[in-house]
Image 1 (cartoon, rainbow over the protein chains, first blue to last red):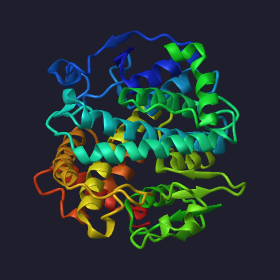
Image 2: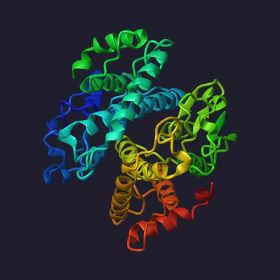
Image 3: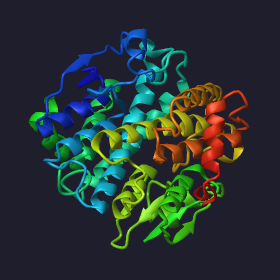
Length: 209
Length: 209
């Protein structure tokens, strides 16, 4: 089994933290997104979508997209559960994890990719030829502020993002908040609940994975 | 339990087809997205994210995002399995289903929302105030053609989108292809494998759910 990933990028970090929480070690291969290695023939032969992280199983099955990779390791290494237990908790955690991705990582990625000259013709992850779009930067910034406010409000009511236990929703949220530093948008001192949570999850050994 | 949905929209259809394949009936409430009911106070009090479909369980738990709702009903009604069985098939199907959403529905949605005057200030689902961005229309159209080509290539090798059985990847792909009709982008006669598949899945009773 091999995990193709890139240490600096937010989505591979989701999987690295997940694996660290499970205590699972997987052979990994670095693919330099900034340098465009994910779009080169060598990696496209492995995954034509050109995205990271990509997990290749021993039988050759290719699995990309972080939540799908989460699913694989949740089933092969059930303890500790990071995706819920019964139907309601599994579905609720899956839902909240999507909020962290769509409202958080995507908004931050819109700002990052559309304002960074290195991605001038790579607006979409895994694709070349899509020119950056200036209007997405401003709307992205508004979206990031919304995301931070919503995260703070959510954490006023619970210790972790999706309830009383640490789950994939925390992992994805942590990767989002830290990714936002790249676009110089910190959580800010005013969001006390989100700050309390961020200090707590950042202190877990998995955060440095 | 109540499912908030809108008959005309592609994402609620994903869940309707899923429920029809499972033979599950759930009380549903229509929320008119075109008319903006999903952004009105009444619905925002139920789900502040303003997105459909939204499932509310009897204990008040709110679950939005189609794959999370798929998960709930897959666990409460396991037969027939639509999300795989073992770890590898569950992860692979989750991965491919994401391709259908990200590469298909999102690209089509970019064209639809950014070119339709009804959504001039609602570029993002569930949000008001985000103005449409013209550049997303052209890039979206390129993305839709890529998606159709990739779908056709995939279906040259297998009966269904994620292998030999009908799964959530077929449901999401079907909703994408039919959503593309709204932006006048048909599959076209040349994509024979995708056409064969589309005729087959459209003939299932669930397609009219």
